[in-house]
Image (cartoon, rainbow, N blue to C red; front, side, top):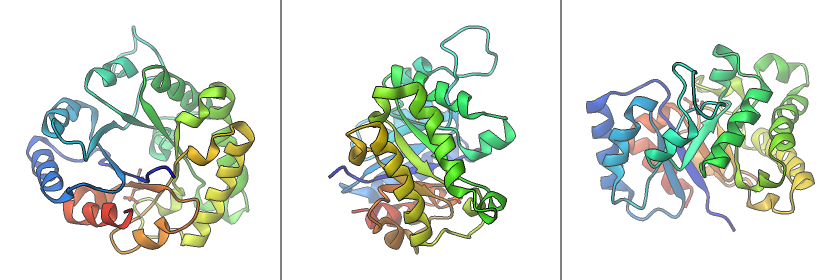
Length: 248
Ligand code: 13P
């Protein structure tokens, strides 16, 4: 069985001092985790966090976004090759906050996934419905549409991705999906992956959205929940470490 993955998405938080304190506290407390662990700081701090993590096998480095272009006149973009230069192992792609605020379409997300894979970076592809979409009974349709764009463009490489189901209504709200609500959607995503690759069982499907030290164990016990993508709780080392321990 593949190891679970717990990834911390720091979003646009932190600074040199806070990052250092957080990483040092994580490294001091993590020991030898039974799962894979990653932290995803904002892009300007990748170099700092890379150095802080140097020598640790327990925590890997992730990024929060990648350009869909290879190189050139794209002011502000950061390419997959640049991320690779800083030892980035994972890259969040298509987070709902980027779909919403930066107008990222399914096709943009699929192109970013392609760039990450080509650079040897594992994309963590985020999908998830809004509250309105859930209320209208559209959840399955939305997550399948979002994932199918990625499957379509990345075909035979699809078993190399990580998927994160993040219901938009659960992000930063304290309103977590129940384990059975989450499992239901994860099963839909697993079935979709099975139709695309014989290695679908190997693809980790993370849950994200108000996952915390108190609710992680129950969510992670679901058969198709293979880890977590953690926002707020990843900024507090004791909480993040409890989630890591729950994934053991
Ligand atoms: P919260 O854990 O703060 O709800 O954020 C989840 C998330 O968006 C992770 O990418």
